[in-house]
Length: 344
Ligand code: MRU
Image (cartoon, rainbow, N blue to C red; front, side):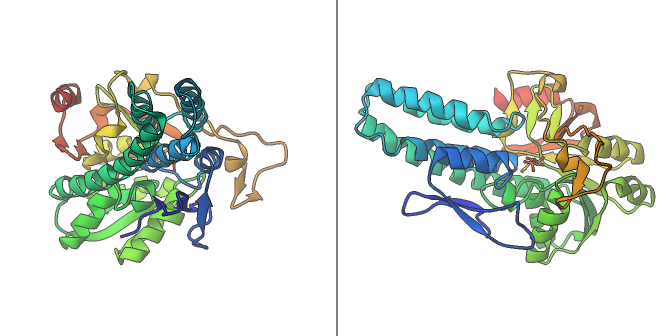
């Protein structure tokens, strides 16, 4: 199974550079928290759970040489690391969730600093292990809802690359395929950065799962032709009432799915829930550089003076969602109630 990032025995973070896929499989070795922050910002590592895991390792890399530090100096360093890694991408809550887990270990009272550093290493490894386990459980729960001969449409990449391994939405697809239920996966290209065409297609190819790439604007057509049985996507943040932030374009797919009576499934671990907010409108949406829209594969495709708007995520309101699948089971509407029960 593909493990897109790991801490190696020299305490370096090794990760598959997702900017270069599918043309080249290049593994980066990161040694400092600043390098990890840059990798997250530039999408060398991406996908909500994976950036949480990377941030946890980045945090550890930033303290591992502080064994001799006094407690105050050590905690000051930890606060710097939380700020550095937490200011990389604003939307996926897994990033902040992982950093808070690291901070609460760092602040553990009275332990000597060198012992806390060992605990921080163990915590980062645990965050990754738990995510893999969550993916496997989500896959099991989600696959039970996939009909026979399913033609599934997915958006962006919520696969092994976006997690500790196996994937959220693509974990469900993998499991359903193993069970012989997948006829075809429609892979949305996912402009502007092509996470679907580059990454999801790459994963489908490796697994031998039948797929076809479509441009984002073809989804309505394939649905109207009766060629889609289910839409399955991941999430970057889910509110207490079940509104879901995910890759830009997800909302339009949910509206289309509702119009065509197609079940719309969101698959995400409990680390993606943000119970401090109720409404999707409260989720901070990352806006990225306009060049990502103005260019295609590094080449300018628009007039020199053109400007662009580039929100990286949108919000799908809970009423458009049929199921939210977590590692603990399947949530159904009304989500405000089922989410409350899940976390109580
Ligand atoms: O900008 P990205 O590529 O990090 O966006 C990723 C997504 O929107 C994924 O669908 C989401 O993080 C879920 S990944 C399991």
